[in-house]
Amino acid sequence: MNDDRLVLDATLRAIPRVQKVYYQPPENISMVHPCIVYKRDDIINRHADNSIYGQKHRFTLTVIDDDPDSPIVEYVSKLPKCRFETHFASAGLNHDVFSIYT
Image (cartoon, rainbow, N blue to C red; front, side, top):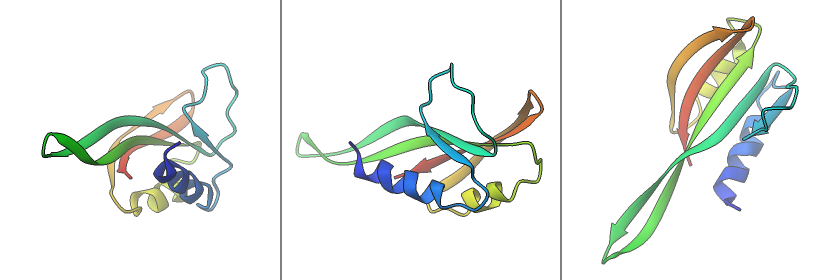
């Protein structure tokens, strides 16, 4: 298991107002809101001397909240190596999508 992912998970769980944090949840679960859903999106390898000497993992985080001005979005946007991607509304819920590197 990736230790960096566990640190990210703990960081997300510590954000005020977040009810649940889901890592790659199955589609058949009923989520509790407000929540953060995240998944691994990419692995970037650094090469030297024909081998890999380092990796960075990129995750996509989605803050899901019924509040369009959710304070959770501000917390997430201030995380190191985090970048806002887009916002959309679906089924009465606001979704703010970010990319973050570990």
